[in-house]
Length: 158
Image (cartoon, rainbow, N blue to C red; front, side, top):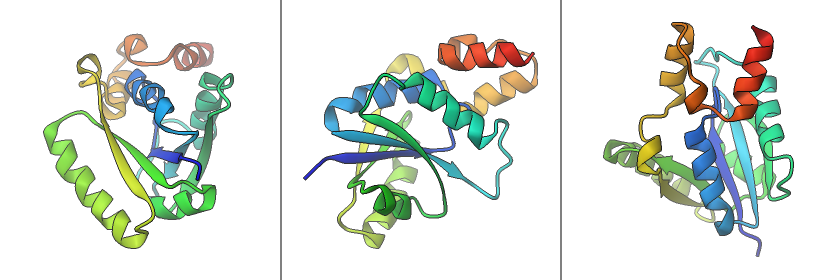
């Protein structure tokens, strides 16, 4: 059986913290899908097409990584791409409580799909898309928090 993972999130935008979790998880999986979830209750800063383009560009030379866009239940996305693992990154202890509740619900919906948690490296603990968006909205420099592909793309649009 192949070890296929899904790393779900909004990736609005993808950060070096996301990239760290993805890169460190690759030895665990034969294939990793990065699932860009559409949340009808959230208004993203960047289009889903832009986020998908960034991820595909970052991982264009790695055949183990692909990206998909999905709506609705993460577990359904797993079923559609054949993922038997959900990858989640944890920054703080309180993240674990929230993520465990989601993992328990997902296990109830499909007991064949397991959740794997990776803790982020200390230098990425404060890197969150929400904070990056806030800094961007207020005219700050977010270069240190984003992959080069993303910062180049943003610079072109200015």
